[in-house]
Image (cartoon, rainbow, N blue to C red; front, side, top):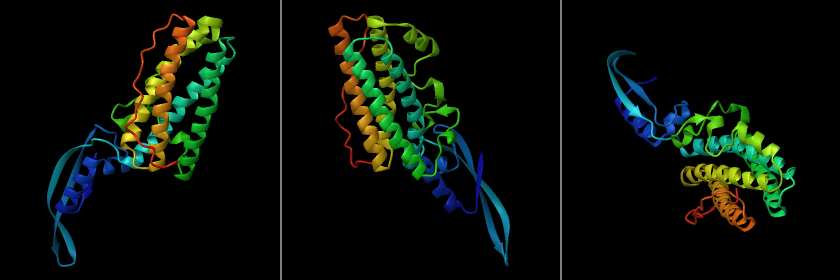
Length: 246
């Protein structure tokens, strides 16, 4: 891709902005991709401009700007949350342990609430869910298909959960949801560190912390119930500050 500008000074400014990610996000270039800035040098001849030279610089876009990170994070996390809610609703029909059922209810309540918060922000920014394409996580430099976001369960795993009951369902649900949360924590931590909108940072921080706590709760519950499932513990982040209620 080439962006044509009229002076070397402006080119340097665009390069600087691109390295910070702002130009890249404005023209829809994914983080990590390369493109060329072609600078048309001109000279004044009376009341006309005459082309004199062309300067081309190749730029590596490191990351999208902070505002774009928040927007893209919300679009991706809505899809991520929706699967968690669907999985929790399946578990609620599996006649499992009351504690595990309580975890599932919490997911339905709180992740639906967070979806509503994200939807409201997107509407305020004039963005629709359908504006997201088939690629996710480009905003954090690791573009993948939407259905390959970390932690998402596959169709076979969903079918197995639907067919399970009792302790088998409890074990599978805790394992799948712990993996799901771990993927969400990864995304939320990046948004908490890199988004510029205070509301996005606050909500991302909340997601990162709460889902980390829940992973450890799933681990301890599986141990207490004697379930045959291996859930690795996770450190609960304490270095992010929710600087606005969003």
